[in-house]
Structures are given as structure tokens and as C-alpha cells.
Image 1 (cartoon, rainbow, N blue to C red):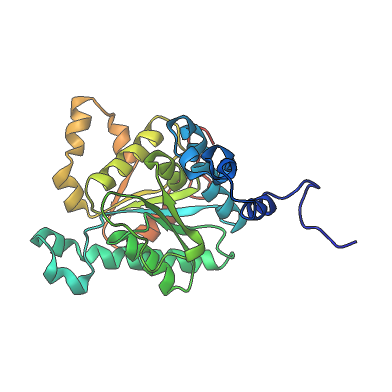
Image 2: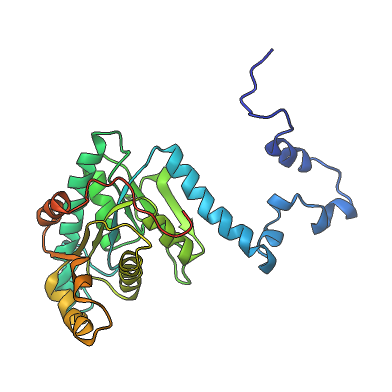
Length: 282
């Protein structure tokens, strides 16, 4: 008997999709009601199906990353507008031009961590970024420099958005829901590296710090690249002085300037040997 790779004896859904394409053309078969539910885009996009879409968006990347053997990641957050150093003269502001150095630091950091990741078959310390330009591109590019793999978690935006060319194609994901995308950033996180950025970077940074502060996520190395930038836009000490955070909360993160400093901070971090972080609903 010919071996059937399916795990069950029931008819495969792909077979029914193909069969449904060959049915007679009648008023009944042309009706939207007759479409197979899981192939009906209009049905899947109904408001009532939002819980199903949320579930699918959580499940698809989880399955594919698990099948790829990825057990832990190094997360890079940072601005899409940070230019490549070669393009800093085209930057919109002098500050952005000055921040171009962090493109190279992100690239070097990702390369070093990916060289480590390769040693165990890309199971641990796999670079994950938002998959876009700027710091995100630098992270995926650094992984490519090391001939390694990296993950890109893109999201559909009103303006044109596409993954950068350095994301490993089989690990390039696209999201509709910001919340589910954030979960995938953190579900395997072994360390967080935050580079200068705007609203999106601040949102990701503060949500992650909140999860750690409240005990909803294990403590992991949390690195802020560029002390001058972060201390200029956020008065951390004022938050502690006001009592809205505790002084101990200022120990949840560490400032670094270079890729080498960041790698050393990860190696020296208390509890850095833990293999996985967790967030609610895991």
C-alpha cells in the first residue's frame, strides 16, 4: 500500500479546494454562501471573525518558527528612519545624520549574535526585527553578514511597507494586529536591544519594560543603545523622583554605546543563562 503522509484518513482540505474549482457554473455555485468557509476572504474578514483572525495570526508564525527549530531570539527595536551611514547626508535632520552610527552598531551586534547562533544550528539567539528599514534593516543585514538566518515581523501600514531584503524569506511574517506582533517579539526573547527611534520604538520599549516591571515577563538583558539620546528624550530620574516608578526600576535596563559593549552586557547579565522569557497567555 502506498504510504500516505497525512496523519488522518479523512479527505484533505487541499483536495476539496481543487475539486471546488471544477464544479459546474450555476447560480448556486456562484453564490458566496457556497464557498468553502476557509477559502472565503469576504467571510474571513467579517467583524464576527476577528477572534479567528487573531488566533490564526498568533498560530501561523508560532508553527513556522517552531518548525524551523527556533527556541530563543535576540530582539532589536529601533527607528525606521535611522539612515545607513553612507546615506546620512540625505537625512531629514542633523540628529538623524548623527544617529546613523547606530545603524552600524546594530549591524555589528546582529552579526556577532548570529555567529553564536550558528553554532547550535540557529536554535538560540536568532535575530528578530520589525523587518522594515533603518535599524531593522541593519539587524537583518548583520545576520546576513554572518551567513545566518533572521526573522522579520512586518505589519501592514497605510503607506507602502515591505520587508527589507535581508530577512530570511521563510521567516518573513506579515501582521494585521500590532498586539499579536508584539507577542511574537517577546515570546522567545532572550535579550532586548533598543536603538534610537520614534513612537513605534517607544511603544515597544515601554510595553516590554512594563511587562518586566510587573512580573509578567522574566527579566532579560535589556539594553538601550545611546545614553545621550535616551536621557535627552526621557527623564528617567524624574520618574523615580516622582515615585511613579521605583528607583529599583532603573536597574531593569542598561545603557550601551557599541555592539561589543552590548554583547558583554548580555554575557554579564544576572540570569542571562535563562533560555526563555514568558508573557501572559503563553
